[in-house]
Image 1 (tube, rainbow, N blue to C red):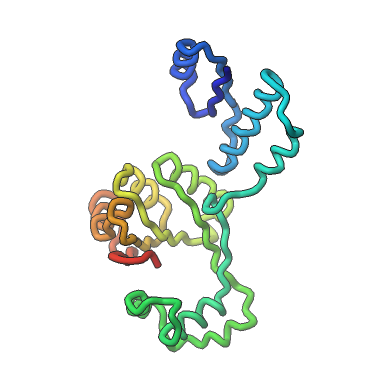
Image 2 (image 1 turned 90 degrees about the horizontal axis):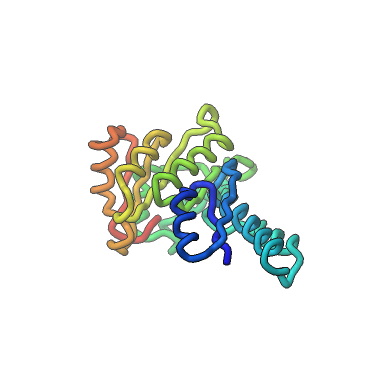
Length: 226
C-alpha cells in the first residue's frame, strides 16, 4: 500500500513509519508553488499518478480528475473586487437598511463620513482588491504573504489586514509574521469565544510583543464579524 507525502514532510520520519507498516513511500519533490492551494492540488495530482501507474487503473481518465482539481475552493487566496460606488452607497444609506446592525453602524461612523457623495463614484471603475485566505499557522501566513507580495507588490499596494484568529493557535508567531507585512490591522472577533480570540488581548500582543503601531490598529469585537 502506498504512502504519499508532500515536500515539507521529513522523509526519514515518514520512511521509518512506512517500514513499520510495510508501505511504499512516495514523495512529491516539487516545492515550487505560489500558494498552499496550488501545493495541495499538485500533491493530489501526484497521488493520482502513483495510484494509476503503480497500483491500479482509475475508473476515469486521469485528465478528467485533473480538470476537477482546477476548481478553486473559497478563501484560498480568493480575490474579491469591491465596487466603490456600491460600497459607499450602502454605507451612506446604512441607517435606512437592515444590512448593517446598529452596533456596527456606530463603529463605521469612526471611519466613514455620512457626507460622502457616492454618486460621484457611479461611473468610477475603481475597486478595492480584497484577498480572503484561511491561513491559521505561521507557515501558512509566510506562504500567504509570499504569494501576496508576488502578485501585489508592497511598493504599489498597502496591506490592510482584517484579522480574526483562533486563540488556540501559535498566536505570537503568527502575529510576528503578520506585522512584518501589514500596514494597518483591523481586528475582529465573533461571538464564539472558543474559536475567536478577544480583540483586546490580540491588540495587546501586537503592540507589546510585536511592537506594532497602536495607531494603525482598529478593533471590532464582542459580536458578529463585520
